[in-house]
Image 1 (cartoon, rainbow, N blue to C red):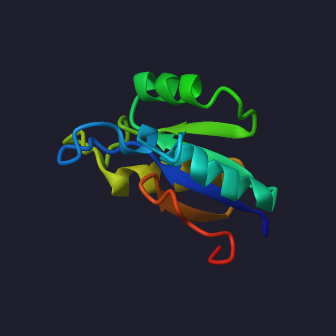
Image 2 (cartoon, rainbow, N blue to C red):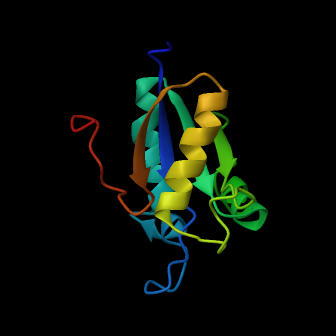
Image 3 (tube, rainbow, N blue to C red):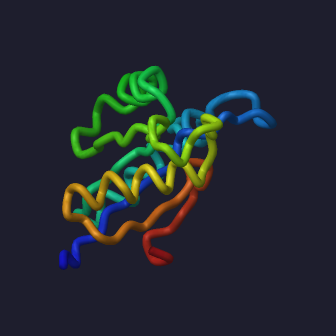
Length: 123
């Protein structure tokens, strides 16, 4: 069993109350997601962004073009468990863990994209 851990950032939310994609919101000149990736990349672990659809993936690729160590996981909306086309953090977590299992990564540290000020000491 692999002891390797992956970092997964959930970006697939609808941001109904917030109004715009929270991960792309800027604080101190950088997007929330950029703040997170800068902290996470210090650990030399694989970083994945769990997205809802291809359009969202493209938006993040455009915004994060300077990072080459990020991979994307698409929500598994074809799964039999998702008959109502659910969209939310649980689907992102489920899809990420299902994907990581196929890649032989058995552990994941999962956070949402709206925590830009996470500290490496906490991790």
